[in-house]
Image 1 (spheres, protein in one colour):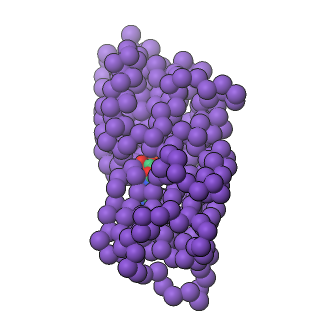
Image 2 (cartoon, helix red, strand yellow):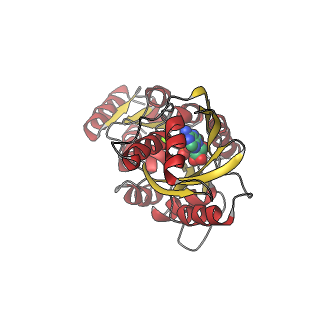
Image 3 (tube, rainbow, N blue to C red):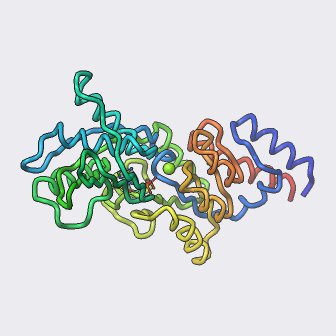
Length: 300
Ligand code: ADP
Ligand code: MG
């Protein structure tokens, strides 16, 4: 490998909005055949908005918003930000301020828990089964549309469902087409549930509408298990590029043969990646692979 060609590749990368940790990084892209894409913040904008507020019988919407909003106000998770902001908006400027929870606990990849106004409140992943029919219906409808639903409980009973809407980035479908054209098999990896993940995967062409091809959507993965999923694909003989933005993605980015971090994401992801896509545009992942192949082509 001539250092000059690699340096030229690195310089060209900077022009495309790709920061490369070191010229040797380009070498790892040669055999990449699989690209694992984190969902939230990578394929989607990650800017979530509160969408549905569905209270269980005997619970008012305001009560639901107040208790869930207060608890989520203590969390930095994008779902939590959307719920706290949405609760304030919908409760209105005249409502009393959201109380500060006591004994707040964040359960990574699961949800949050704490005491609000004397009640033991939980907001998080919907348990499979056991929801009252109206809440189960609202959850299913939201998930089929690609929205994430969370369950609000207090004092050990389910009190309602809140859903948040994220938006697929305008460039994601084009990026998936370009990655496929380069011979890479796309895989969606997320902590979110399967129904939501498949709706997003269909939207951007990771799944063909109608078919549910095995293995291209890996859903319901806990943050600490994302790297294990990358290693599992590697154990199957695949050479894996991973694109991610979150703290949750850092270990997976480091485990991948090539880690691409969204420049719009967290510092932890950027530090763990081999490349940074400065503008957070997924199409640039395809540019990066094209560039390195071309650069290596001139070297060989
Ligand atoms: P992703 O992989 O999409 O970034 P996470 O691993 O952070 O998602 O979260 C996975 C799931 O855990 C979410 O879809 C949600 O159901 C639940 N969850 C995590 N944090 C929270 C929270 N603060 N409030 C409600 N639900 C949460
Ligand atoms: Mg993410």
